[in-house]
Length: 196
Length: 380
Image (tube, rainbow over all chains, first blue to last red; front, side):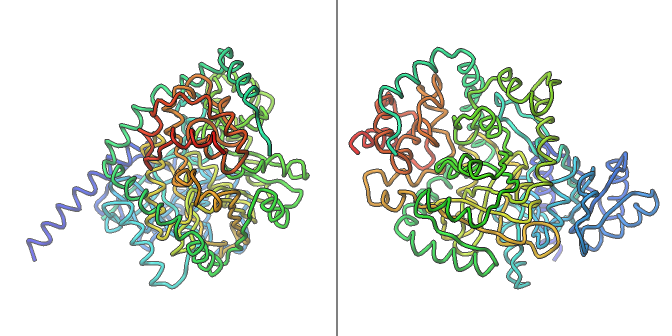
């Protein structure tokens, strides 16, 4: 038992190290914290000035962290899940979107999620800054492993989502003389926080 | 469609050679293409193997084409999408008019759209259309045709782009960054106001009924999540048997285009189940000569992933870019594509400007014998 957990942690360490390299190469920022409590400290720095925040698709550990921070610092946070009508003004003025992930691919630095209501898509693509909070167990070696995991979740639930998104860093364009400019229409900044 | 004659193509190429401004744009854009591609291969060494794998999948796909399309259709409809088949450009336009009204339509890049003159058709029909990909937007504003499959405004210099954008995004455009941010702000409003979003697809997966498309700009994301109606247009040679095959094909396309990866891989399965996003999703799949080409001397063309590597490798393209091409497809593999989907006579006229150097064949991820296909385009 000790041996196998030793191998597991080595593999995990390698995957996280590779993930950091990939995310940074894609133009994003990577953070690793030992527990979900550590996420708060990073968020406080990232969400400054606070502006309009939208969240969607957060996992059950991350959700209370953001609720507590919003309460403590008076952040204007709109949770896009279970909304009854489109919060047009929040979507138009959003500066930070915070989401979870179903899978994270180490080799390509990809963050993947299923999106049934396009709430996660709105939080991921509309703001200037997209922050992803994912637990370390979501990290898999390659993007093909990530899709395999996603489809197994879909077949387990029996419900096909409207979208599956894979994000590799902030939006960019090279359309004028191949000069790479960030952002284009999507976020300017992409941050991935892995906890646990 | 009759298309351009030899003399017309010749005249266009001569004019293009004299246009110093245009030439600079091309050279700036193509000088690093080899370096960028090698960097992508270095980062993802498995991609060269994947290219071989995708080629053999493609060979089987053309054999199984009708069966794969039926399987895709079943899954796509089960997921709540509306499936339309269009045998040619006119058919596609008819199908489209059933779905699109006179309102505002935002569009991300689609070569199939270029193939049938979609934007021009919709505009003539009273629909307001905005191309949301920066390169395509520049092409739209200059009433031009895309010079390259992946970077349509590859031939435009910074100063020309500034002149073109000024009336829309203001005159304070000191550099490319200011232009990009100006367009971001201008287009964001259009995304929110649009009635319909229209996107292309890089690949379809028969086993899941998914349409997959890749972008860097995020324009495809906003085009497909903000309007309440979404239309996907694509063509029949892109139906892969398995989801994983489709993802591999998109990855090969990306890396051979000279990108390490794209910012986004979007997978569309069906309409939104919530208050946000499209409640209606339509997919129009175009034949336009492809089925006919499957048994013909040009059938190898249909393996093309449209990565544009052959265009950037082509010495003629480096000098004259979009001037050597038809309505939708330019240079190298663009010549047999023109023969299949546009005008054989035009392809014939274009074919005489190939130098036969074979650089295109060398770089093609699908190992397509492009010089041979161009030669065969002469005898149609």
